[in-house]
Image (tube, rainbow, N blue to C red):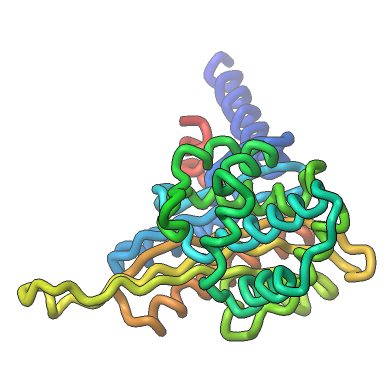
Length: 305
């Protein structure tokens, strides 16, 4: 009798935990395996096979549920810093009660759409103190200590922190509707060569769109002759704000981030990045369709540890 009761209690506890991990309260942070077992398995497989370092994060902007997985180390931010910077420049102009000049509009367009680098340093100086003030305003203060004021591309951040910054761009009350819509429109115009990562999986989510900004950097071959046989390190990052349908009155729904570094070829690195993005996208589509992804016992232990 006692053994039967224990079994029933254990079964009930497991059922409750599984339910908790698949319909979470606001601000919950859980392993990515609770969103997609395949995503975590693929991350483990790819990191071992290619000696890669990969970290991912997904935020449901409706419930503020956050999933993260892979290597949650800090990665250099590279060009994924540009949307936060553009938002900050527009917010500053709005605060000064002035319109952006034609030159500013062109620079911000080139920064986002073409991922141009020339004016990034100038605008970081223009807003004063880099982005630290805005990270605090957007309620992401954990990003401040790792902001490199002298070399913007080397600012360090975790995938979840980057996801939280993009979530703030999409939903923070400190960002006006005008600034947000101007920023979204710039992201819509990003050229095809600058769009990879977690695309919305049409036709499973018809009418949805993903506003993607990527960051990439190739470390040159080392000067040391003994290391010449090693491939250069390739860093690929992407951050995407997903809007639900229809576009006319759609709202921000998810943020996805993938950050990583490999010593594989450029094409192999890009294929890995897109493969992970496709798995995350499929998991989000399953979630929207109401398909349950029951976490494994190992995932349960991760969530509770």
